[in-house]
Image (tube, rainbow, N blue to C red; front, side, top):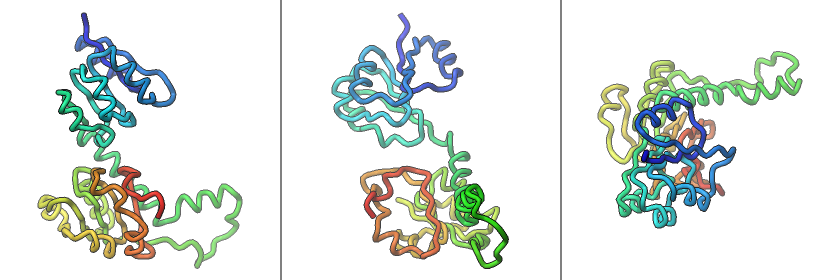
Length: 247
């Protein structure tokens, strides 16, 4: 009898084909919205493996009721939605997909940096609303990125790609704050390791590429934003949890 795997959202057909070839019976949640936890638990009780698409809350409650699972595969790089300790206690291995989105995420961060520096979103809306009538030399001036300081919060795989793009395109100076030194970034880009306070005060562009944890949750708050340059660009392509909701 084939083992069953539950996939919590619709994904490309190639995944189903590969899993079927590997001997799995594939069950896919077809709903437009993610399952709530009770529905997920009900569905998971009848399968051997789970492929989670990141938004599922796999906490102690889930593992108390689904300790029978052989494995959980996270369809994402981050896994802050999974209580890894609870999974380990239940004897369930958890996998993720590191580096699969490094280039794509860095592209998005790089594009946002350019869009903000040149007010592209704002000006596009202005044109669409019929408010742009004529060229005004002193109005809507952007920010010149060449030679500016790029601050990276979390110099991992994605942060490295972002630094490479910014230095290659704009010869930006690179500073970073990390749990530990990244000697590769220092050798490749001349990146300078700084404290969090220095990262805030020195960055012209501050891009977040860190893992969300108990230590980093809400780290960007009213106090930290007040320490940044008034015209600094802040980019977060990681997790919303880094930003304190009431700032």
